[in-house]
Length: 113
Image (cartoon, rainbow, N blue to C red):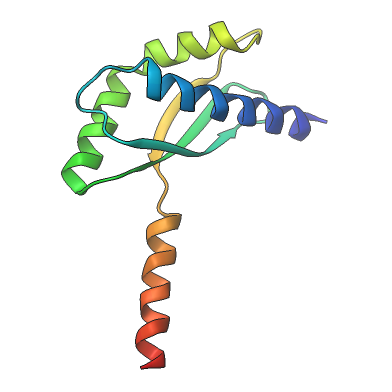
């Protein structure tokens, strides 16, 4: 039962975060950020937001710093948009799955040569 609710909350948060990051965040450090996944704990107290940033490592770090500074605003905006008793604490992490997949693809292509 808790997993179903946590999944619904995470999907709703993912949708709202996409809108918040594209329309509301005006920090120049935050570049082209895509929310790839949101993991919400079973008790809905913690939310881990996985992001992908287009650009080099400096751009990625700058975006993460900008998002960390805007964490309070983002959390309050989510709380306003999604009716929950308590808005989860949020943390941002890079989603390494895309880069990992590209690396494996490159290795497989080299093996086939």
